[in-house]
Image (cartoon, rainbow, N blue to C red; front, side):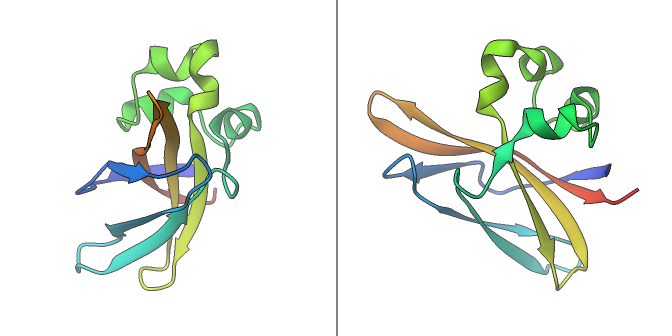
Length: 122
């Protein structure tokens, strides 16, 4: 998988009622103003660590694209925090990787999107 670029988002944090909720994320998938919507959930996503272990991408690539600092991405105690979901836009004919996580803080939940990356197969 080749990481092409990070997509600019208008909103990166979303309120969530429960840890197993779903969040609708909408972003512009091209320069023509076409939108793509995907549903984020922990059940439908996978650990980012798994994709790195399969050599689909590297933490260095993700850090260069601004997903998070390299030291955070590589920290053993934080690897469970990064989830990913692949989505394909029929309008744009492009594939995207959404990196996110649901967090709990004092019994309040939120969904944080670390980044949406345009990707292509090698």
